[in-house]
Image (tube, rainbow, N blue to C red; front, side):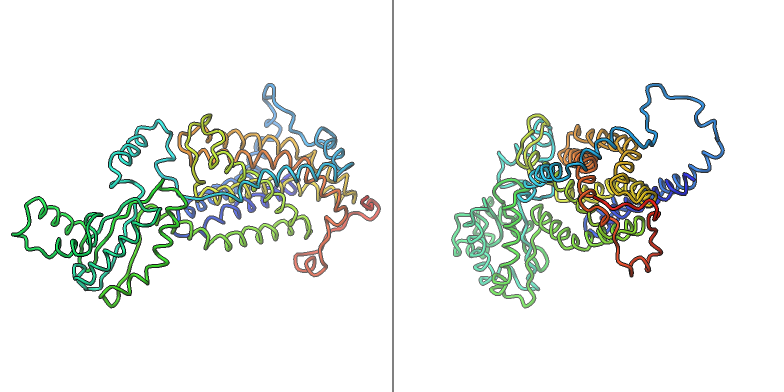
Length: 491
């Protein structure tokens, strides 16, 4: 009997978690698909164990499963009455008085996310007193021409000589134009070996016969030739102002790419190409890859989850509300992430430097939190739906469903909060962000959303919670109505 009811809930819950994690598979050209594959496999194994292996083990053990009692264990038994039923009934007595303040709180907590800045994490993600980070900061300070925040502009000359007079003058003008940008602190290329050189100085520098140059200047020229000129290509090294993770650095790369055609028209090669590399460029490419794949990933997660919940509870309204509530809790945790890690409230306490949010973290957090929170959302809804079919009383079904799943969900959420919160003790900001964000999202979802928002909204919707059009019922199977003798009109 337990496998027929709880087993079904576990199956749907596992599929829901897997759907959330599979959302990461869409983000090609990033490291996210590997996380999605690993997580999905782990969930599948756990689901097989819970629905096949565990019932077999329990059958083998029989009554002996309760032979030894765990001292001081919490009572996790499903009861019809208790604290969660009491809370649900009090909330449903005054749903608007509860719902509006909670929604204001959650929306307010999510507002900072509108001001989020994203970037890949650099060495600045290490603690301020880390030896590696201190070394990198010293290099930036003492040798700014070797600064970590630099980009490389590679020009494919298509066989044209980069040292021809026309190409040297073009590169000289281009480099001077870049150096006039407030986001650029320095640069070097064959068109500008030294920032104080005029175009004629550059031509003389490269055209002068070797025997007429001092040994030191000749060595510098040969060094630049080997470093900056390759077969059918030349490069420029540009140092940018500020940190590698700054939005301004990424925008500088995007501006260079947007305006490269204008520069290339002045070159003598027929198929010239200008490419930008470096951390800021990689950062821009990574963010673009995420942005390009985000709509497809979200569409897959949301649509698949709605279909799955509908198949379980045969309602159109319930899946929409479940998704909205999960997004509400996730957005609140995202907002707190910006408040703490980007704006720096708590930097001293947690020993980090305020910086943009790692670009992959919101995707990781959304997929994990959405899957996990929908996991026990499905478990709770399955119990509420069973009570609705048994009694036809929406209010009683919500109170009873929350009570019967309260102990299990509270325990599971507490474990997840502790585990994820432990990530916050990491010395690396990336893990701190993931840990704090996941812990906050699970805590908000398991308390404010489950205990207050769910019963309030389900009380307001009444019998419409369980509405679905006839054609959907026919498509997915017969819709089971509550027993006629027990069906009650929702208040």
